[in-house]
Length: 175
Image (cartoon, rainbow, N blue to C red; front, side):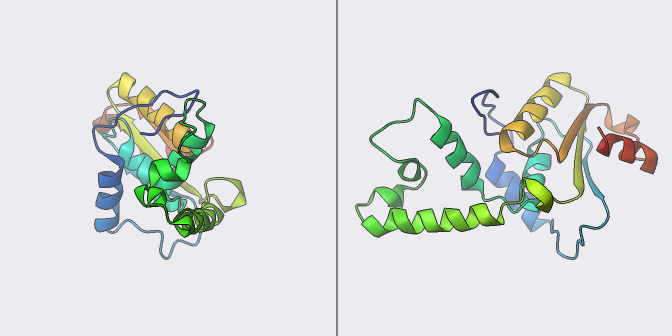
């Protein structure tokens, strides 16, 4: 998962793009979700949390390039010979002056649609559990780096011991 300056980079065993593709191809969608009632999405053997985090990013309509662009823009070690857009998209290095401007417009539109912050954050809890405490720490740090820590909760618990009764879910959502 993507890191930030205060959260170390972690290489997820399941690539983020594959996780997002799996979610989309298995029908994960917020279509028909009114946002009026809280929903819960559970991954009982979450490992490093990639599926929960990618599901939260999809729920927030967050374009994958936004997180990497944010990281590149905040990086002091970034090369001054290339812009962050040129680092992310090779077509921005082709010498076409309009390419970088066009990509910038696309990313501006993606920022407007991003719902990771403010009142547009969906009322969904992405709950991940695993028996490996180290994996749970990695998942929590990765969710923070992706900006979805408020939507993702991770707990060290075996899947057979995971309590999904309504009062436990409500308690977890309020943490």
